[in-house]
Length: 239
Image (tube, rainbow, N blue to C red; front, side, top):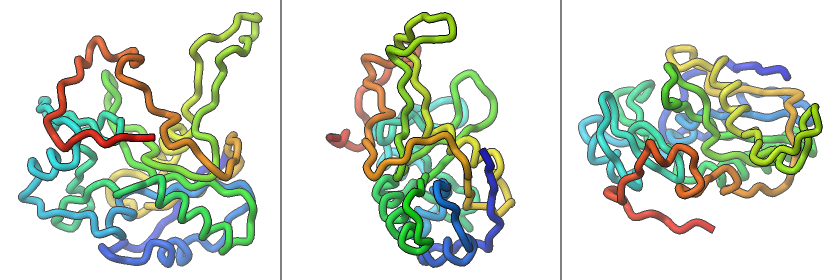
């Protein structure tokens, strides 16, 4: 698998996202996966807020929010995130929120890129970074994706000794996001785009946007999380 971050100019709020991608991505091979950082998607959508409104914005953006030592621990769109993904880094004095609907954006970009590069198979991931309990540093997370199956299921298959697997699944979408975040950087690198070639993915025209979600009652971390009742915006129904 080849992972290549792309150096760009600074993306400004309200700038055209597709035009920006076309400027810096000259070609895409058949079967490539394009990773786009969520920050430039949010900036294209005008998803910003004054830096003075941090607590209010976090509560408005999250299903629930509770304070921890350094950040607000929140739930947003079925994921546990610090500060509901609201971030002041590289925001030019503003808070940058998460995109409105990353799955929709990924699907739209995929259609545009298929037409632009005259190819049949391409994946798109809208990526952000997140912390993992008990581990220092950040890894990647796919807020939305299009063009491939996000989950590889091993349940019912056998290991090398013939033992049938009962629970094992591979999170393809977040794995790709993590690979990209590793080379894109988190500081002043100015690499908000990344192209991955020869990724071990199964391409598909449609994705199930909830395939990576786990119900709280089935989450192995539930005993230590003790998820609180809703204290932010109302939980949205999902299909």
